Length: 134
Image (cartoon, rainbow, N blue to C red; front, top):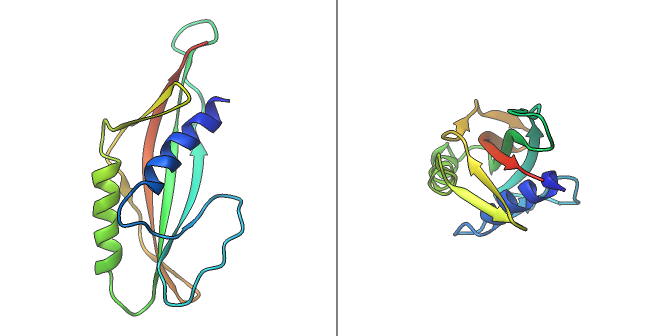
């Protein structure tokens, strides 16, 4: 259940950003609209860290938001959205879902842009950490 709570906390924070941006949530159907930007979401969970014997552990990972902008318009719009992501998911920001708090562990990482079809894609990785106690 902790994986679902972590996902819910981070996805809720992303969905609450203003202005809103159409989102292709992980493992859901989404059809991009030609010429319109959107973002894709995925998560990678790291190996849990056990700091003591028992059921408690720390779960880290990467919340990845890939910005998908039309090609040919330059990087400015994507860069502006990256700044909004960094303002929302700053180091130390905490988001809670169903009693579990997930914190942003480091400043989001901007990866190299790539071209895919008619899109200019910029992946942004948000490192997170949650302490699970049970």
